[in-house]
Picture 1 (cartoon, helix red, strand yellow):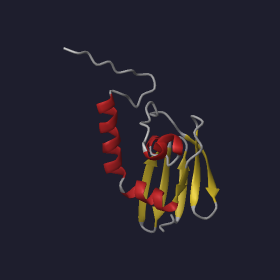
Picture 2 (cartoon, helix red, strand yellow):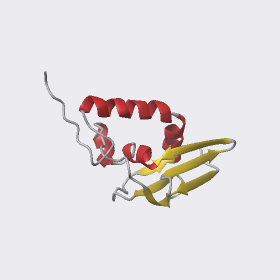
Picture 3 (cartoon, rainbow, N blue to C red):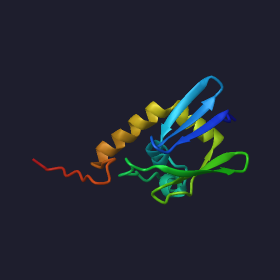
Picture 4 (tube, one colour):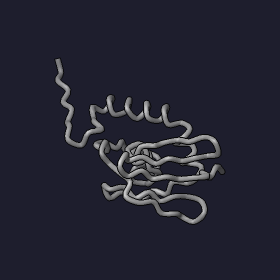
Length: 123
């Protein structure tokens, strides 16, 4: 189990920094929101694509025992418990997971921006 040596919430930039010894990882609130381990997002084994989360922020962080963090997002989502192992996986696989998420959005014709709708015209 990899427990961060420091956790810093940056509300203005909507990021969370996790430090593991000399390594530091900065994760956007949007990234964390769309990868929430909650049943609402993970869909009981059938993940639900999260859209329109571009401007989401983290309003607060709460400890969940000695094994996880509860991240409370400003869109009202607060049901995911991010275990230390899951946070480390998100941090170290961030680029790959983000690229996969963007590809899923494109394939579904959806957007990160809540004020944008994508319309595909058939030719």
